[in-house]
Structure formats: C-alpha cells, structure tokens
Length: 358
Image (cartoon, one colour):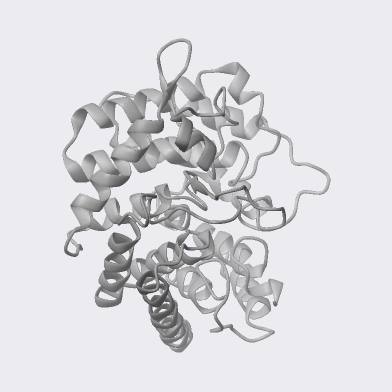
C-alpha cells in the first residue's frame, strides 16, 4: 500500500491539516504527494486510505482547480462502497460473522459512510445505513457485530471472539453514524430500532466508577458474556479510539437521535468524570488524536457544544497544549503532528467527522 494516500499516517492527513488552516501551498504539495502513487479503489480502500480518504480531504476545499479531482475521488468512493456492501450482505446471507474491518470506522463501511456523508452522496449513504441496520440483527444468539477474531489484527484472536465497543473499531462507530444521519434527516427502515438495540447492549455492559459515574469496557469476550460479568476492572485511558471520550460522544449522539434526555445526561456526566480524573488523565502519554490529549480535546469540544450543562473545555485545551511532542512524533493525522496541531487551533469546521464526532 502507498502510505502517501493514508489519511491516518500519510500525506493525505497532512493535506487535510493545511487545507483547514488555510495554507494552500503546503496543502497542494501534500495533495501532490498523496496521489503520487495513484489513488486506490481496491478492496482495502477506506475512509483512511485511497479514494475515500482523498474524497474526504478534498471536501475541505472549494478551490476550483480541484473539481475534477473531487469527481474522480467521489466516483472511486462509490465504486468501493458498492463492492464492500455486496460482500457484506453476502456474508450476512451466509450466516458468517464479520471481521471488524467490514464495518468499522477506520477500514470498514462505517468509515465509507462518513466519506459519503461528507461529499453528499445521500442515496448510497442510505444503502450503508441499511447494511448497518442488518449488522445489529442477532446471529446465533450473539450480536450481529460480534467478531470471531481480534481485537488486535496482529495478535492471536480471543477464543470465541468479542464485541468491540470503541469508536475506531467497534459498534459505537456505527452507532454514531446512524445517530448523526438520523439527526441530519437521512435514515432507512429500522434505523431507530438499531440505535436503540446498540444502546441497550451498552447499557447492559455499563460499569460504574467508585463515585457512581458510568464507563464502558473496551470489549466483551465470550466468557464474559456467558458469565454476565465484565473482565475489565476500571476505565481504560481516556482515548478517543477505545475509551470513554469516544463512547460518550456516540452515546450522546444516540440520545439526541432518540430524544432520550436521561441517556444524554449520563453520557455527558461520564465524560466530565473522565476528564476530571487525574488517574485516567495520567494514562495519556502522547498528544495524538487517536490515543492522546488531542482526541480527548476533540471529543470534549463536540460533547460540550451539545451538552445540557456547561463543560469546561478550556481545561482540556490547556492539557493538550502542555503535552510535549515526542521526539519521534510522526507527521500524520491520527497519531502525529498534523492531528495534534489541527486540534490545538480550535477550528470549528467538520474536519473531525473523520473521528465521527460530528
């Protein structure tokens, strides 16, 4: 794979940073680098790689010289999405379980739905939503999103598989996308019921801090499901990808879509408890969007904007700006300099839709 067209790590993410901050010359140079090895429409293309990644990035610019590039990237995104939808429906029809790369934000159809929403391809977006509704339907007494492997693609899988709850790779990604599109007025049959079903699952696995605030485990294993007991004893680091910030935002969006004020209050309270806990904050060891202070801040801004009560986001901005860049910090968006700096600017656009925060 050509790393340049990678939104997470490569030039595509750097281009997004420069487009958002108005540095056109640097953005153009990064875009040239991003397409230097071609633009992928292969099976592995996703929101974070290939044509869909470029479609998402190019939507940040209204430069007339990019009109043809936008059309090519949009066409490639549509082609990839249709192929992936066909494969996913075939898998469901055959009663097989999904790999999380089929449906997740980073590599799967949820991410492709984000790209389609960004470029206004509403009809195909509805097809993605129809698939996500099917994904929530039980399969042999397990959730339809139950993965037979993982959660780490490069490590042996868990016996019996797992339910992943993170925003990046788990079921809260589809939850957030279905909630956002419902709020937009774009929906399909069964979507509200699917949102409610995911929420009920998360409610069942909700845990409480010593102070009584909600948090959710990163995953649930088959043994935990059989014993009806969670194995994660305390909240993980407050990261966007797997932790309370991302899960709280997905729950907040779901609450807005459902008109569930109690759920919204719980999600917002869970986030405030997370961002106010020195022990949890101490687990953040970088300033990146995925695992670091950048993701906490980005999620906090969006949660605060929709919150029922004020949330002190400036505290998170100070925390992020005080975080020191590692000597080996990469240049990219998710874990690197582009994402950390873009978050610090506080630009109020929809660039963070690639995180499913808006």
